[in-house]
Image 1 (cartoon, rainbow, N blue to C red):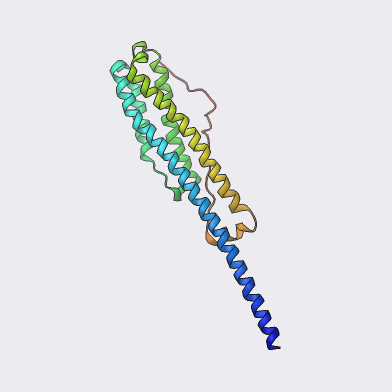
Image 2: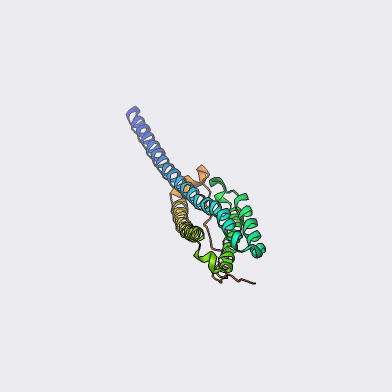
Length: 198
């Protein structure tokens, strides 16, 4: 009888260790995926910062040639200030509304820059200016980087959210308090071409 009790106790201990090991393994996977999302988000913010740093140089270059286009330049400056005022921490990525506000500010800056670049078409001297051409090239490169980093961020969020929802890992995620992360989505009017009014 004592031997049977010892065997039963050993089986229970082994089961507890196996379940505990599994839970730790799943938790570790979730930590790695969560850190991946945070890293990708930091890179998205990095390229937005790069764009934000380029905007004052672009505006100053254009000001010298297109002083009468003050409203467009002011709009770009306001949009940049709005975009840099909203900071979204990796912890806030679980809040879709916070991400939506951040996206709206960035979309406002993208629209203002598009209108500025279209306005610049009216200034042939500016289009041939080497400084402007270099800034424009850097800005275009930055916009491409933003698109790439958004895609990478969404891939990391997809992997993380998928792991959260897969059974039986969803049990550990629920117990450990891992919230789903929000995807970076295009603005509702992103498919429409920007409208420029003179």
